[in-house]
Every structure is written in structure tokens, then in C-alpha cells.
Amino acid sequence: MMKYSLFVNTAAVLILVSSCITSKKLTYLQHEEILSDTTFANQPEDYKVQPFDNLYIRVATPDPQWSDMFFTMQTNSSGTNITEQSADLISYSVTIDGNIEMPFAGTFKVAGKSLRTIKTELETALKAYVSDASVTVKMINNYINIIGEVTSPGRYQIYKDRMTVFQALAMAGDLGDYSDRMKVQIIRQIPGGTVVKEFSLTDRSILTSEFLYVMPNDVIYAQPIHGRFFKMNSFPYGIILSAITTFILLLNVIQ
Image (cartoon, rainbow, N blue to C red; front, side, top):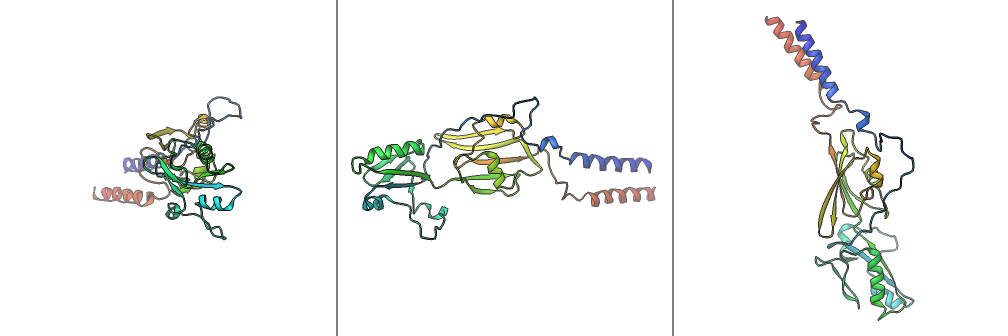
């Protein structure tokens, strides 16, 4: 009987220990050496427009008639937000060939270019028709997808130009306790293909990485800790241990 009791106690301890998550696995931005508290991040390159993106483009001139001709973004007086469903109707959609159709400018190549470059090139192209035009170019589909071991996985809008991966994860309620902070992936669409980057949020080196900042269409995947099959707060330890104890007692009675 004592041998069986020892077995039960040992099994209980092993189950509890195996389900524990150490603080080292949960802490962000650790470092092994004494480093400066000031770290300068690499500034990311400007986002390059890709096929199927939706662009807000407005050409403003002193002449209202010309401005209205180019104005594609229509909103009502209440400032209704743009939805994904309405984006194609109120914006310039980039074709699979990377082009848009602009009044007077005709077919205009935008894929692989930054918004700043598109603005400059459009202003130059339109000078033949409007000498004092001012062009505004913005992205409509500023969304990222956050999936995996986070509190609230889903699709989220990027609300500013320089959003870090930490700010993005905060929108999803942060990583879960059973998320592997040492193996977070960003899946990024780039001109000509897709790149997958895996990095650790527990290491301060992320602050100098080009993947510190998220880009439109990024997918952030928070992997679960390897070998995690159940959660501490949901696994029925009491029921299982009681069943083991009852089984051992029955064996003892039979013997």
C-alpha cells in the first residue's frame, strides 16, 4: 500500500510541475548582460503597395470642379467609417498587374512603390492638366491578422504608421500564458513573395530588428509552448487523482 501511495504522490507532483510556466518564459525584453536602457531601433522601410491593395487618392486644387473630379473617397456628414465591403467602391483598387486607373493620368503603375513615391509621381503626371494640384495618397486596407495563443485572435486595423509588434499584440489582449514568447512569427507579404520571420519577444534584440514594426497585411502567429496539451486551470486534476486513488484502494482490498 505504501508503494502505491508513493506512486500517486509522485505522479501528482510530476503533473503539477510539468504544467507550470516559469517567469522567464513569460517576461518580455530580457537580456543576459548589463546593457544601456536606450536602444535605437532600425527604422523600417516604407510599405510597398501590392496588387489588390485599396488606395485613397485625392487631388486637391484651387478649382473645386477639378478637385471633385478626382475625389474618390465619399463620406457622409456623420463620418461613417469605411468597411472592408465598401473599400472597393470608394477607393482605387490595385489590379493584379499592379496598376490603377486615374482620370487623365490613365493607367498608373503603383505596385512596388511607397505611398510617398506614388504621391510625387502622380503630382508630376498631373501637371500637364493641373499645374497646382496637391495629391494625398493613403492606404485603406491597413489591417493585420493576429492568430494563435493570444487572448483575442482576430483582424485588427493599424491606426498609425509606426506600430510595433508589442502594440499590435496589445490590441489582441496580449499573448496567453501558454504562448511561446521565444517563437513568435510574422508572415509578411513582400513584392514577389512571402517571408516568414521567427523571433523572440523575450530578447531585447527585437528592438533593433526590422520586424519590430508591423506592416499592412502582416500575420502575427503566437505559437503554443511545445508539448502543451492542457491548461492548468482547465485540466481535471482532482478527478484523475481521485480515480487513481480509488483504483489503488480497490486493488488493496482485492489483495
